[in-house]
Length: 173
Image (cartoon, rainbow, N blue to C red; front, side, top):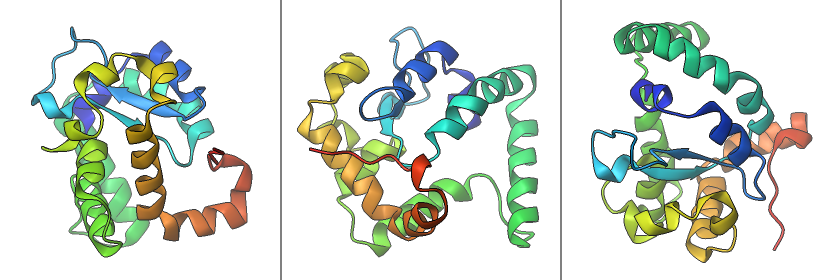
């Protein structure tokens, strides 16, 4: 969500995208205000890490320079333009994550950890989040969340791997 993007630290995001398991930490520092405590989370990045590395710092600056409603409206307009569906809104992106996860019978706790919903802390606790990128690469829970994210996005990954194999994050164990 836009409010979460405005609270990101560009330097931390860039560093975390370079981790063995690329990730974005939402509400990493306890000094960062979040609407609900479960919104604090670490999201494994499955594809587009170079895109995020290039454009996320700019997006953070943009979101901080305007209102949340203005940015949400701009995102909604881009989604509508790309899909031709004039009823879509930015929040549908979160609903799409939920629908895709349901369609592949994804682990509900893992999905909650990715989306910042209730129940996510059972997989990646607040204490584990404080370890940062280096500490999470050895976490079985975080690796499982990564695998679940790949399962949820499998249909998208097939297309991307065929067209842009070098921008998809592969994890070897």
